[in-house]
Length: 64
Image (cartoon, rainbow, N blue to C red; front, side, top):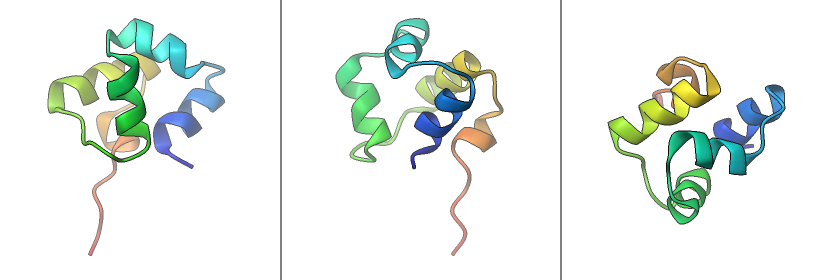
């Protein structure tokens, strides 16, 4: 499961609530969730702030 969806579920938030509070377009959010696009740092920070989590929890670095 995508981290945004996972954390949203833990916090009883809908994706729509995150979209509205983060001021991100619906299309862009679903592109991020479905890993079709990567968020800019600014967008990632807004999503993390909306979910009240550290950026590293939301977008962990991939280990090789």
